[in-house]
Amino acid sequence: MERVTKGQNSPITAQKGGGSILGDRGHLKSPVLKSQFWDRNAHLYERLTKMRFRDALVPMGVQLTNVFPGEKVVDLGAGTGAFAVHACHRKGEVTLIDISARMLDFARSRLSGAGHQSKFKCVVGDFYDILKTIPDHSVDVVHAAASLMYLETDDELLQVLQETHRILRPDKGRLVVLNWIDLRGRSGVFSAVKNLVGSILFWGGVFLKNRGGLGEVFRTLSEYQSAHARGKGEVKPRYFQQEQFAKVLIEAGFSKEKINQKIFAGRKALATWVSV
Ligand SMILES: C[S@@+](CC[C@H](N)C(=O)[O-])C[C@H]1O[C@@H](n2cnc3c(N)ncnc32)[C@H](O)[C@@H]1O
Image (cartoon, rainbow, N blue to C red; front, side, top):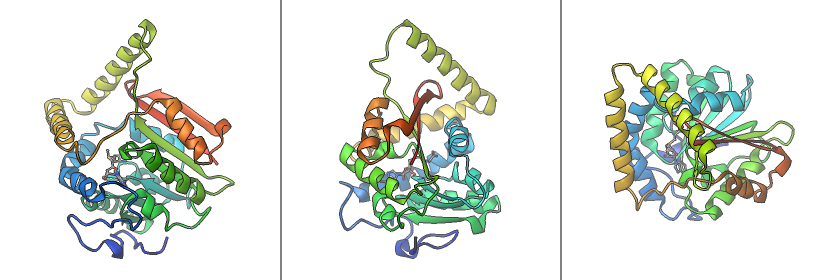
């Protein structure tokens, strides 16, 4: 993991504001558009992070990764650092990878503000390009929340998961992925009731965390959703079926027996955790 510096941007990404490195292999179809999209919307994401709107993913990531002191953690698509701050708190050594320099600016302030300056590194770039620079079997934990779903094809996803498999330690390495899910094909009364209960619990949680400020949550959320609608040519999130995601993991080298999956967070999210 040379080419990165502690608590600040990598030297290879010195151009701030719109700058992210572009892979020479051109792994992504439109890396510039993607980084521009996330740079442009980072302030909205930070607002949602502060409102703890997406909190459900964070405790799930913290619980499933179960970081021990001194473990090396890579956070793929770390965004504004909502998970990374917990991993640092648990004394992990965290590398935050993100295609958006702006997102990582917010993450850096969050982590430094919490007193973790010496425990993290930020690297701006595409998952695949940055993973390629990390030595074999050198990482204990890879975490990816709401980020791999922005890889547009199974092929892009496969390459990223293959690199992830390569860098994880064979003895205790583990990968935790949290994604929004496609619930089509799961209709039926039982499922509908579970979805309704899940949604009530989820929105009840959002309400309790943001008493008095719920209007602000909805406003920010709708701005964020409109940004996605306008940015269709830049980012196209994919909502996986759980079997489909497991299939790509197996193709990437993970063993079927070690894959665990659970649907959670208002029944809209899928947690997948797998050990090497
Ligand atoms: C929805 S946000 C999730 C952020 C964070 N994981 C969280 O849960 O709060 C998705 C993040 O993935 C990053 N991202 C998307 N595609 C990427 C890619 N190909 N390489 C690196 N980062 C990427 C975006 O810049 C953005 O910060």
